Image (cartoon, rainbow, N blue to C red):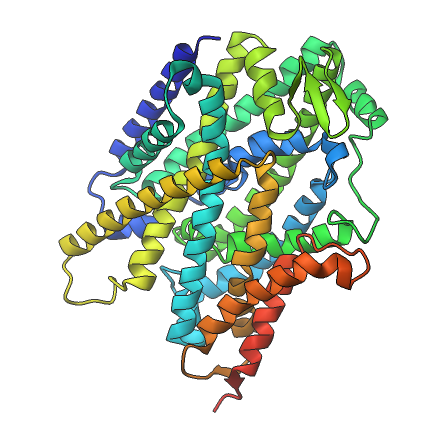
Length: 500
């Protein structure tokens, strides 16, 4: 397939986003950028959040996990264990966190930590969000950019660093003025394109294999692809670990994440924000299930073309296509050109929602939480805008460096990297919010909070590396986030006192 043809569709798609941004950012102010003037439509927010949550990682990496049985970890439909945990987590967000945020009329959710605990807790929470979202968003971006690089830009002689810089400039252009208001609309468009691409690929492969969905599921079962629950308590993928881990991940990576909640609290009424969370949850479960089914179909389809397992590899024509390489290889080289184009459009539709929202949220959090521009009476609207734009540009540069770092690491299954990172970076946030909500104790003055939140991930990392030796073969999986939160909670308890 012609790389120039594919790249022209990428450019055309971006021009559409730019037109939407130009329309939605008319008369934009700092309030428009930060919280969409608290006038967002909850239906659009719910639908757009699907694209933000799924991102290119779900689009490429989740289907690849299905046949990855030989590499340990999930394999089969094991990832659905985490999705079941998500349901629990999103219910907590809808009925505990959302009412709290609306009651306090927050622009930044981390301001709660200052109201309830201390200024140091507030700054520390915002700092950990910035670290968490910076690495999480750039890991997601890396995955999609790497696919575009390998299958399109390498053939055009464009280096990886140039590809990354161009895409980041695109994202900067359409988020520059409108911020959250623009993203609510562009995410809706991009989520539509991504889901349409998913459905078309599913239907086409079923048609090519000349089987019904029921027949496909029967074949998947014979290959052990439909297995969901891992009952070995020593494994990282043990079902209770994954369900509990999924619940905690949802609470931390959505409910305690400024990017995700920034869109939710841009809705005028609390009840509509709760509807948004519940609608988003139901849709997310269905969509992830479809991605897992697609993964099973892709492995069956390529096996029919001659691909086979050898040790920890899934080989086709001498190339290992297991994991993240499976879907792009199949769509761009073994399906018709029209399906390849649909795949590319769906892929970049998955790319932009996870990047534009992160860039906007990081800018908002740094300006509001770290620099405190909303509290400074000495800054005019114009000066605040100038500061905000400088920070926006600065984070785009940081994105570039982080993506190049992930390129250097070059992991075959980036979804595992993202969730592992979340266990360390979101743990202190989970501990801070849990301490504020579940106790009535006061934090002592000083920088003890910051020290505790920095020490907890380090202690958990040491524990994780030695868990198998200490606990007779037991491996720590996604419960790391919960452990990290509990360690932070315990440290805060020791650094606190009864309310005076």
